[in-house]
Every structure is written in C-alpha cells, then in structure tokens.
Length: 218
Image 1 (tube, rainbow, N blue to C red):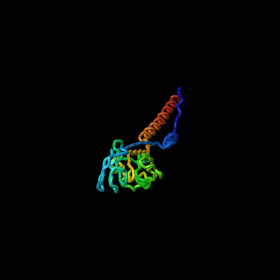
Image 2: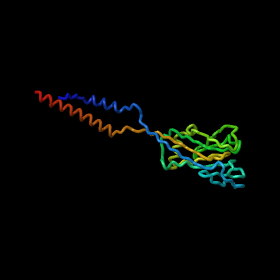
Image 3: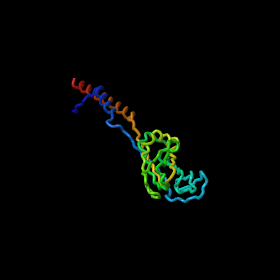
Image 4: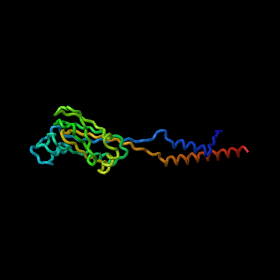
C-alpha cells in the first residue's frame, strides 16, 4: 500500500508563498536600430538663398550662412530615425547610442551641435585639430545628455519616429541610432491561482484518502 503524506493548509500556504517571491526579477529586452545614409561629397548649389535646402540621401541640408550649399560650412542637416516598423511606443529606455559619420569642412567644428527636435541641442565636442576633409565616426551615449523619459516622450508622440538635426560645419553621411528597452514581466497571477487551487485540492484528496484507510482498518 502506498503511504500518503498529508499536507496541512498551513503547509500549502508556505509552499505557495515561497513561489511568490522570485529570486530574480523577470525582464524582457528589446533592441531597435534605425539608420540614415547619404554621401560624404554631396552635390553643391552656388549662391543659394538663406533657408534653401539640398537633399543628400536621407539627409536634408539647409543653408544658414555660407554662399555654397552642400559644402559642410554654416549648414544645418536634418533627418529622422524611423522605428515605426518595429514599435510606435516605448517605455523603460535603458540605452540610446548614436553613431555619426562626419566629414569636417571647417575648424569651427569644435562647437558643432547635435539635437533631438523638441529637446535642447548638445555640443558634440569632437577632438580638436581634426583633419579637414577627413571622414570619421563619432559615438555618443545620448542618455548622458538626455533623460530616458525625454526620448521616450518624443518617440511616443511621433509614433516611433525621432527627428534630429546637426549643425553646422561638417557633412553628415551616415547616422545610426540604437535603442534598448527593458520591460518587466509580471508574475502570471492566473497560473498562481490555479496552482493554489490545485495544491489545496491535493491536500483535501490526501485527507479524504487517509480517512478511508482508517475506516477500513476499523
């Protein structure tokens, strides 16, 4: 005869409570990347009017001051990172890493700025004495300059798009923005409820079986 062990309701409660305390919080990480591409030597327009624009691949170049448009001097370059194919809203942003391919065309690049439209621009401060006309890659961790909530707000308000701009003494030929989010995964309460009911049912079954065995011996 198989010996049956009886679990009291108190024992079952202790077992269930231990299951409710996770050793490590569950989380799901999501990574998104968007890229913009253009030429490091775009076509130029001589004697453009102030505010005139030139398209360089995914980048729109606007004249701010110099009498040549497209030479990377006194210009504003704007574009959008489009993540809408992957998500139209995000929360719990944990990383925001930007890579820019720049070709400086003026020594004044040392005070050039990058900015997310709707937020304050930041001075990117590339190395001084950078060779003019030489393309280089620059990496920025945007969460060192912006709060995660600020980037999330822009992303969500524009359904997965982030519009940005760079100014004013370099040609931008590639831009890559990688975002990572960490979403907490709650305990599935419905499953825990089923486990609780099952454990209590097993306890009742054991008690009933033991009672039958005692009655048979009498």
